[in-house]
Length: 180
Ligand code: CO
Image (cartoon, rainbow, N blue to C red; front, top):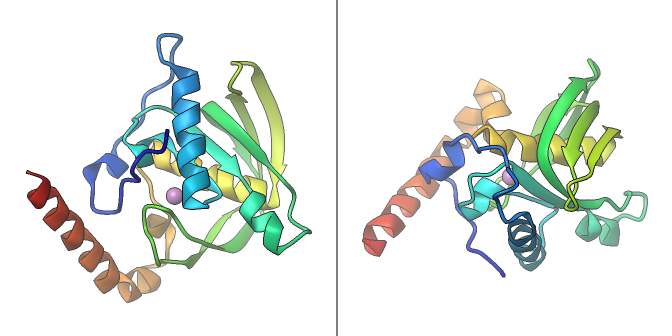
């Protein structure tokens, strides 16, 4: 089932997501995330972006692999993810976000991370991620803390996109008002 994607300006994106328990319908959450990600042709999507404040996200690098065969195919559902450790070595990469259409900026993140999560069958997985895998994982993990990639930009870059963000926010408020 495809869900509407929550856009920048909504307070939902700023909330902390709760741990997934056995009472949650994990398969339904995973399906909604996967279907919505596929429809949006994105590479990552987290629970809060479809108004589910639960610690889950999906990643699928397929759209990137189509453009660049050197990129590794990486696909999965990540439940209750934890970043155990991050390498000190930073890496810069241009990011975007389905909740912030039209904004793409360089973001500095750890080049390598060590993570733990449950897959959709609730198996515990521990692994080391690097390059694009580490990149997307850290971006999606941030969403579960209510953090957006624009929060990680330098003050100067933030200033440069301020008007764009303000416009997005006011559009969102208008939308909410009309829905009332
Ligand atoms: Co995002």
